[in-house]
Image (cartoon, rainbow, N blue to C red; front, side):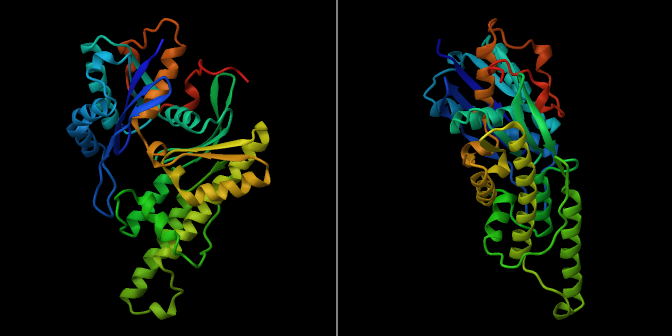
Length: 351
């Protein structure tokens, strides 16, 4: 039986709607809430943005997929969590309403598992160690006994959050994203600045690095005001971006290599918005080459939050459910804290 799933993603500042039919992406439009340089995105304003564009985005997704009506959709999928509360609720409410109007089953998806399943679909990775790096999450994951097990993670802020907050210090543009603009500046950096390197077993910590680099930036600003630039060690913004990337990514490669050795896998799958950073992929590639492993990476179409990844994970969940009833309305509540290992993976063989 051919199944067509529609997925709604809106856990952060991007809202996306994607349509999947038996592993084929039919459409995947998205819209990003962009704030002025030096500012982050607040949950209430992000939710208003999602509310204002979601129906137009739905029409576009259906048009690109050449689907005339939502009645032709078999299952409605949405991000149940984790994420920002207000945006999650806005998208969840719309999906619950549409599912009831068209009398269709509904499936709530873990955001991280959406990234993983989309990565596996696009790259063909069979049983990889997963590095999940985004604005809200940093985890090293491997599959075992019907769960995506977390081997290591951040103990404070996510790597993407660290990059975003650093970009605000430099007043970099948020268009198309802070991380992308940091990546472009880092390519021009020539001087490496020593920064704290904080790996704790299989976990990482980024808040101290951010505090340290903030001290450097503030110190340079004060020196310029006092006319003492020549007395200070001067670093360009490009050098700062380069040094931060090299340090953060080296930490991520280290814990990923440790997990790779532990589970005996020969594949690393990088997912999440930070995962489309070419420098991260290069550094991971060097490590994997030394271990006779391969890097499975995807571009910004599927690495950054999108609706198709939610549709794909929801499709897998629904297809594995013999009842084909989906979730009850009571089960579709949103959760800002929804652990990756909290979902039972019944669509993969146990290994």
